[in-house]
Image (cartoon, rainbow, N blue to C red; front, top):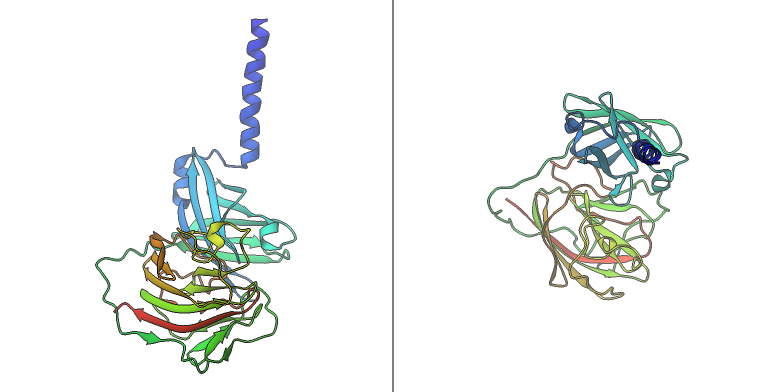
Length: 325
């Protein structure tokens, strides 16, 4: 009896470890030394037949198992169901439900001269290629000296801005100026400042129309959310948040038809946000790109970009920036 019990226990333990390895995917129990070269944050540029798409990947290990978090073509950073290293090559899986694809998008890459160089199947099955570089730390030393205020929106026209069609397949429409206010089109193009900035203080005022959504992309890469129609989503998707990364604390009530203010300081990756003069984010690190970013070149200066591809109309005025000198 004791022998049978012992044999049963041994078989059960062996079966448990077999199932764990099988469910985790090939290479899940790879040695720390084989995973180490791949770990960290990566800025990805995906090359498709029509355009380049920015993306972001964070690779960590837990008990020798590789874990991946990715920002895809849109939306927020999310954990991936499978990632592994086998024979010196990285593989990770982006679920079809997240990308509107016919099948799961499978990414493969190897390390070449410190970069990840690889391929993937696109949403329609067509082959894509991609390259990733290590995301910069963006650590700043000293305290910035702020330059003179620059008014980005005159209240008269769209001088100093240009429209940009993102990957959301926007409907026809354009940004307009109505009674001195800048008005988003609703499911239309984005609006991007011609000028680019590195570190800055930004002030702007905004007003939500009914059931509306927009955002302010800092350096064109990190979205500061504006919405009054996402109550059922996580706090990091609400007004005052850096979308998908940093939730506002405290979270202020949603408001429709009333002017509100954002005061933002961005230094490197560190962001501070005041909403209606209430500090909701205080000196927090932005880990990486938001979906819909203009590019993945985090080490470079970038524009202010107002989101127009979401629903409803959002109004803007008094957009003023003070760049670091």
